Image (cartoon, rainbow, N blue to C red; front, side, top):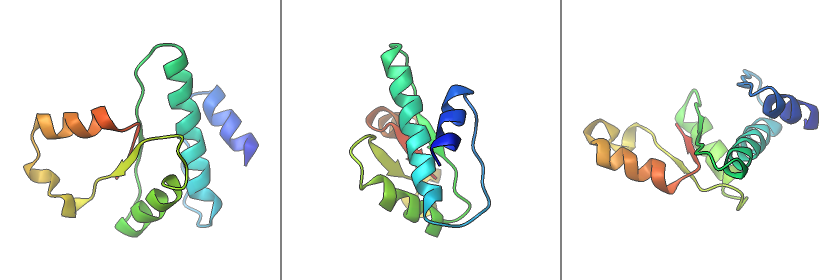
Length: 102
């Protein structure tokens, strides 16, 4: 797992997996955290977006992310009524969080 995380961060790579398992959300969280931290150290703005194929996977990733205090994380799914959100609503979500799971 460490090799996957290191390679993704070093090469600014998007990591995609179709496998299941407990390590998947952990790797996604670790890669996101390292990228956000690297950007902050360079005084740059950076946000991470995790695209999950289903609401259960969104919730699974959120549960794992909430066990860490490394990132401010939220998730947005259809029941959040995002179709009615305006630019200010999206701006607030992006401003307050380092990572968005959707």
